[in-house]
Image (cartoon, rainbow, N blue to C red):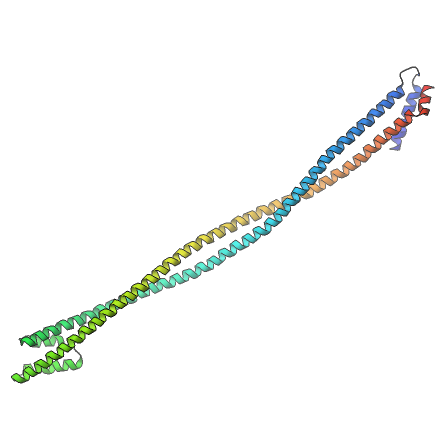
Length: 324
């Protein structure tokens, strides 16, 4: 800046020397012009300071807000990652629970089918046994009636009932049939006849007791079957409801996982953009700051040079030279 000061001083001296003493002082005009230049330089320097202060505040605000946004994104990423992991884990746990319940339900449905088949076989066996006993009782009652009536249908009635009798009783009936087919003696027939009637009466009571026991067993089997079927049915329905509820919960967890995954991606993208913005802002602000500092130094030196020139021009030596 020394060449500038020297140039200004030399120009002022030359101007003052060449100007007619009688004219309006050109030196004063030069001094006034330089003073105006100095004021203008100061004003421009001040304007730059004001603008730079605003820009600097912009830099500070941008860095602060962007840094806070990056920090918030980092925190959100941790939470979103945790949410994603938990949602997927919960969905996987529910899948396992659903599979276990479905397995149990399938086993119960198989048990229900087996129980139904077993009950059908029990019912079939019951009906066969009940029919046999009922037919035997009916046949015995017919035979007893025929014997008591001493009718001609005794042999036929005894033959009908004989097939359903125990071995010992069947042998007794055979002996009696042999007796009545030969010319019987009255007393022998009466004795044998009363014995057969008594035998048949006992068998009838026995078969009736067996039929009653069979009916009670059937009632118990039916009741137990109904209880089992109801229990299995209720359990199956409850399991299906639980499966439905868990599938709904699983779907929600998967939906939450998808949302967290999407938020995770967008948050990462936003964080990267903010980090880039922060670096660009730092670089731009640093560059502007350096340029501002250089400009301020340059303007200060220019103003100082002008002030020095004014000082030189206003000195007595220059003023005297201009007047002589």
